[in-house]
Structure formats: C-alpha cells, structure tokens
Image (tube, rainbow, N blue to C red):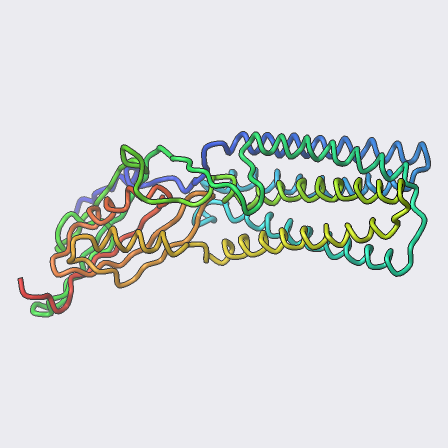
Length: 373
C-alpha cells in the first residue's frame, strides 16, 4: 500500500505581524535608552563631585527610566525572536504588551510617589536649593525633549491624540484543510472546516492569496497609526513625555519659589503632575490589559466582518471571534451557516478589503433546515 506525502509548504504561513517602521522604532528606543543612561552617569558623577543631592537623586531617577526603556527594547527583540517559535500561537507580540503593562504599573507608582511627596511638602515644607534644583530640571527637560523628538520621528504620538492612516501593502494568507463530515443520508447537514473547494462535500484544500488592501485603498476604516497601537512603544513614549512634563512643571514651580518666594508652588504643581501621569498610566494600563486578555476588537471591525460575510443574503455568522495579534493586525475566526454554502476560500476573500484582518479561519456549515430554493 503506497503512502502519499503531502506537500504542506504552500499552506504554511508566518505569524509575524510586524508593521512598517518597526525597525525605526526599535532604533529610536535604543537611542533614547543610551541617552538616558549617559545622563544618569553624568548626573551621578556630578552629584558626587559637587555634593549635590538634587543631582544624585535625579541621576537615580534617570536610572529608573533607563530600566523601563531598556525593558521596552528587550521586549521588542524577544518578540521578534518568538515570532516563528511554535510555542507562541500568534507570535511574540504579547511580550511587548506585557512590557507595556509593566511600564504602566511603574508610571502609576511614580504618580503615587509624586503625590505623596507633594502632600508631605505641603504639610511639612523643607528648604529647597533652588539653583541646584533648577539646573537639574533644565537638564532633565533638555534630555527628555531630545528623547521625545527621537521617538516622534520613529512614529510616536501624544497619548490619546493623533489619527493616522497607514496602508499596509502585503499579502494576506488564508490556509486550511477542509474535511467534510457527512451526516447520515437525509440529515441535510454537512460541516466544512477550513477552505473547501466544494460546497460542503468531500475533502478539500484551499489556499487564498490576496493583497491586504484592495486597489484604491480599503473601505474599512482603521483607527490610529501603527505606533499608536504599538503598546510597548507607546509606553516608552509616555515615560519620556511624563518626565519632560514634570521637568517643565518643576521649572515653573522653582521659578515661582526663587523669584517670588512661593514655596507652596512646588508641591502644588507636583500634585498636578501626579494627576496627569496617573491618567496616562491608567489609559496605558487599560489598553494593554485589554490586549493581554484578547478584548481589543472594536465594534466597527466586528460589524465590518459580519457585513462582508453576510453580504450575499444567504450566509449568516453563527460564531464570530476577533482579537488583536499585532499593532495593526487582527485574527478572525468565523463559523458560517448557509443554505447554499460556498467554498470557505470565497468567504475568506470577502475579508481582504479589511486591511487589519491578517489571519482568518473559516468554518462552513450547511443549514440543517434550508429554505425553499
């Protein structure tokens, strides 16, 4: 009895859902990490040399930011290495999301610590060396502005703002092995799993290739640019933005204390800074935690998938799952029921205009009680 060796290579595909500009974002994160580390060393050495506690304290503060940024760089690299590893179902993107979630927790801790220090200073004011503190604040602002500029060039956005429209041109692959499980004659029911070439009959293999965007751009609307949905990059961006914001507030408060004697201004603006950073960290915690538990499919995308599949008036979706697997990539699993079921590849092709849908699994069923033809 001869055995047939199946050639599976045409049906295998990558689970790497990286986006354009990923390399630029990685280089920017590394550059910002290096700049932060250099600033940390300079401040620690200068603080030791001059005996300035303000410089020494800010040096260690820079160290915490360097650790967060370095973690973002490592997460991005580990994520790339995990893309083709069989142990990761949809690549290693969630490694970056986990890094972003951890970074958001650190930001929340910074906000709480800042608020506690501010309240303590309001209740029990302590003398401030305005000249040293001003020098540290200006240095921190310059370093963080440079970091914000580097990250912005690589595609960063101010949290909660920005609306870009990147069009990904590539090839989306749908693969499956359809096995029709016939019911006893007269049952009127067939199940096709995958991309069958027949209408609910026999074993079939389907392979669909198509551009992720139809000519003239996709009809579907995706919200936010790639960097906005790159949780890891966004977390790093918020870190440097938060530090720049607090440095700017510190300069204003120190100027008020230095020139007008408003010592209360420093803890007051620190409370404002803590509130803003807390809000940013909450937004990042919410978005990254939703991605970690696969709850990131927005209603418009689900509606677009349903409308595309049910466009012929015959097919109905019995089951629909949509979840995020990359910065601008979603996976879709659907169960289609129809009186006159088409090949699963045909239903797969209907989703090609939805440019963020990058991985699709289709299950086709013949309706057990077909309508009158």
